[in-house]
Length: 136
Image (cartoon, rainbow, N blue to C red; front, side):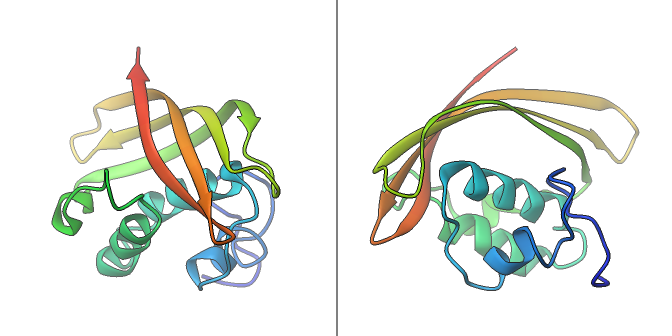
């Protein structure tokens, strides 16, 4: 990606100034920032499936995360992330929730929409995705 490429999370910032720094190892300061960086990892997974699946795995709470292989999403293209709301999840909170809608399509062009309220936990200055409730 070039230095001017916009971040897939929809923040309006460049990838390097936004989710790229978290993918490179910097801790996301908020639950929403982690949610955006996880979405971006899925959106960029076609460029490097191993790196981005590993990022999603590493930012998932150990007690609820699936196998690494299950995090690869071949044949899906992620189109848009819309953050609907956040509750807590700030730099000094221990927990938070993020409600979002993610739109994506498969390699046959069929479009999908995922609406989720995700739970996050902060440990040792790092946010982790715990689980989420998906609805229509």
